[in-house]
Image (cartoon, rainbow, N blue to C red; front, side, top):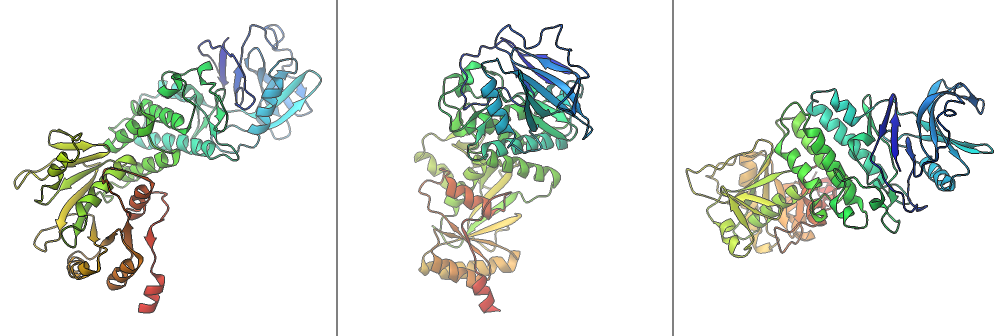
Amino acid sequence: MKTYTYYKHSLFLCKDKELLKISKKCLHSIILYVICVNTRCVVDSKGVNNIINTVLFGKYQILSVLGSGSFSTVYLSRHLILECNRAVKLIPKTTGLADTLLSEAQLLKSLHHPGIPNVYDVEEDTDYYYLIEEFAEGESLEDFLSHHSNISQENFFHICLQLCDIFLYLHTFAPFPILYLDLKPEHIIVCGTQIKLIDFNVATFLSSSGNIFNLFGNKDYSAPELFAGAKPNPSCDIYSIGKIMQFLSGYVDTPLSPGIHHIMQKAAHADSACRFETVDTLLSAIKYQQKIFQQPHLCKNIAIIGSHSGCGVTHIAISIVSALNHMGYSAIYYEKNSTNTLRNMTDLYPHMSESNGLIRYRFFKGYPHYGPGICMPRHSDTISVYDYGVFEPTAPIEADIILFVCSNSIWHWHHAFEKGESLFTTYGNLTIICNMGQRNTMHTLAEHFRTPVNSYPYSADPFSVDKSMIYFVSQLLHLPERRNHLFFHLKDVFSRKK
C-alpha cells in the first residue's frame, strides 16, 4: 500500500503502510489527501486524463491531475462562476470506504479555520462522489526550508504560533475534540504568510475508543507512547509540535533564547507527564518568549520581600520559580539573604541535585547564598527571582517588580504596615501578596495600601505545581492569556475612600 500527498506542482511518495481496519469514528482520507490500500486504481494510467477540460456540474472545469490512488483521484479545477481554483476528489461508489469518506467530508465542512483547507461541497452522480475542496497553493515546510538557508526569529515565532493556533482549534472542537497524531514537515503547507495543515489520515476524535495510530506510524515526530500502544491524547500532539519547533530551530539565523529551548524540551519531553498540559499553555509560553524577543527590556527581574520572619517569602519564591518553569517561561531562583534556607532544604529533599552551584529539583532551579564577594551568573533571557527575606531598609533592591509578602495573622499587621509604607516610599510601587489570605485580612491590607492584594493559595510543598499555582502566577505576573481567578477586587473600598 502506498500513500501520496499532493499540492501545487508536487506529488510526494511516502513510506508503505498497511491499513488493517477503518473506524468510522476516525478521520482518514480528508483534506488534500489520498489513501491507497490495494493495487486497483480508480482511473487507469490511460484514463486518468479522460475528463481534462470537462466541466462538472456546470461550474468546475477540470484542468489537471493533482494525484491519484486506489480509492480516489484528485484534480485541479477552475470554478467558472467564482473564477478560483478548487481541488476535486473523485471517489467511486464501488469502493468499500465510500460511506466513511463521505461522512468524513461532511464533518470537515463544519471546520472553519484559516490553517485548515476547506471542504466546500459534495456532489454525486451514478458512479462517483465528488468532494470539492480548497486548493492549498503553496509548498511543504520541508520544501520551503530546503531552498531557504535560514529563517528569521520573527518567522520562527510566526510559524510556531500559527501551528499552535490550528491545534488549539482542533483540540477544542465541539462536540468532540480532534487529535491529529501525524504532524511532520511534509504535512505543513506554507501558503504565503499562512500555514495550512493537511493530511488528516491518522486523525481521530478524542472520544474514540481504540488506537489506530499503529496502522501508520511517524517515528521522527510522533509521541513515543503511541508506539507502545497508549491511547492517543492531546499530549501526543503537543509532543509533535515540540519536535517541529526543534526542526525549525535548526534554520533560525540567530541564536534562540534559553526560554525557547526550554519550551521545546518541555513540549517534546519523552515523559508525557512533563509536557505542557494543553496547547493553550504552550501557545501562551511561546507568546511570552515572543514578547521578550520583541521587547528586550521586558520585566525579567522579580524581588520578593517579606514583612517579618516566617511570613513565607522563600516558600512563595520557590513556588513561583517552579510554576514559571513548569509553564515554560524559564526562571532561576537567587537567595539574596543569609538564612541558608535553600541548602537546609537538601536534608528534606534528598533528590535535589547540584551542578556548578545550581540546585535543581523537579521544575525548580536556583542558586543558594554563597556569601559576599561571590556573584552568581545571570541569564539575560531568563526570569530572575530574588529572595531578599525580611525587608531591611539599608539593603538595596534591584528589580523590575517587587512582591511584598504579608502574613494572614492579625498580630503581624503592624509589621506589614510599617515595612510596606517604607517600601512604597522608597520604590513607589508594590505588588502585595497575602500568604493564604482570608477575606477580612486582604480587605484590611487593600484598604490600608489602596492597592489590590493577591492571595497565595495553600501549598504544603513549594516544589509542587498544580492548577491553582499556575493561575496564581499567571495573574500575578500578568502573563499572556491567563484568567484572573484569585484576584481580590476592591472597587467598593476605593469608591468609599474617594
